[in-house]
Length: 236
Image (cartoon, rainbow, N blue to C red; front, side, top):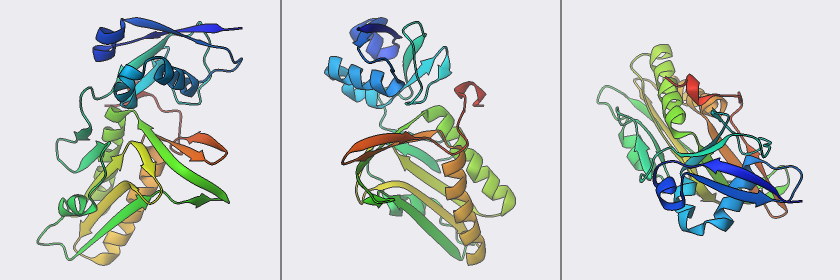
């Protein structure tokens, strides 16, 4: 039996498709990821806009694996309409759909008084626990992701005074060997750099609202940040 799901649209997609669209799915269990996939199939003309969007359920951010019912209030929002790269006001933190230039990120933390700098690059590895990865797909709630990335920079500055931190994370499809995140840290001494760099990547994995879909040869799985359960209305 086919069930209908109503989705409220906004911004450019609403102008193109109307304020509300309906999709039909036949499976008993439906997730946000299923809805997104169906929209890609049904409305290929807005595929590029879907890439930079996020879903809410009853006005709360919905994760890709969240179960939904036909009676749920689902909305599709664009986090950064018409933009491929979002950069913080200070210029140190960025989210992009473009390949990341590690040298550019490293240049943001150069200071004449700093005698040490480290650049961490996270790339897509081919095998994870015996499974061969084909590619990764990243999604984020961009406004809160930017806030939490800056929060990490503030934590590092408070814990290790006079350090400087920059980070850029990529969204969209990231293939084997490609870079998904670059973090650069500089400080007066190397021991501080090592500690601050490790803190930055561990905290990014813990609190930054970015989802990763691991696509294998025989399946796929969405994974979120470690703390989970975050709410966009908590963003400051």
